[in-house]
Length: 215
Image (cartoon, rainbow, N blue to C red; front, side, top):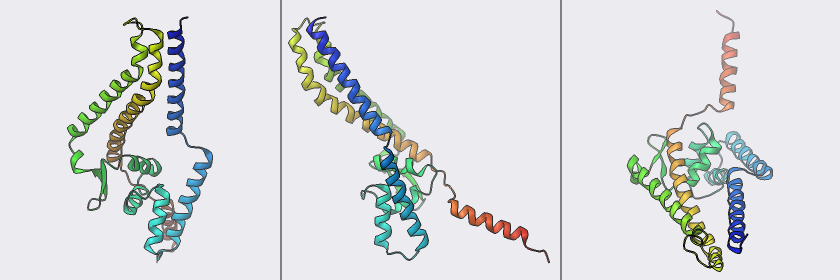
C-alpha cells in the first residue's frame, strides 16, 4: 500500500468520524439537557397558568427560556407551543426563521413574502444542493486527482487545507437547504392541540352535567 493510499484512507476515516459526530449532536440530545429543558418548560408554563397577572417582562423572559433564544418574539413561542409537536415545531422555527414568520392576523406560521412562491424556495434548495456537491468535490479534490493526474503522493497533504475550508462551506450549504425544507414542513403541519388541563376541565364539566339530576 503506497503513501497516497494511506493518506486517503486516514482522511476518509477522519471525515466519516467527524460527520458522524456532527449528525449525532444535531439529532440527539443528552439526558441532562432534556431534563433541564423539561424543568424550564414546566416551571414557566405553570407560572403563567397559575399567575395570569404576571408582569409582561416575566412572561417574555419565560418564553425566551423555553425557546432557548431571544431572537424570536414571545408571541411566536406562545403560538408554537399551542400546536402539535411543539418541541419540534419550536426548534424548526428557530432554525428557519429566516424563511418564516408568524402571521398574527391569521394566527399561523407562513413564509416571509420573499419565499412565498414555491419556485423561490425550489431554486434555492437546488442551488444549495449544487454548492454542497461542488464544495465536497473541492474538499476531496487533492485525493481525487492524485491517481488520474499521476501527481506525487505529497500532493495529498493539500487535503488538510481543502477538507476543513471547503468542508465547512459544504456543511453550511447543506444546512441552508435543510432550513428551507424544515420551514416548508412547519408551514404545512400546524394542527392545534388541546392542552391537557383544558381537556381535563372539559371532561370534568361533562361529568358534572351528566350527573346533574334532571328536573
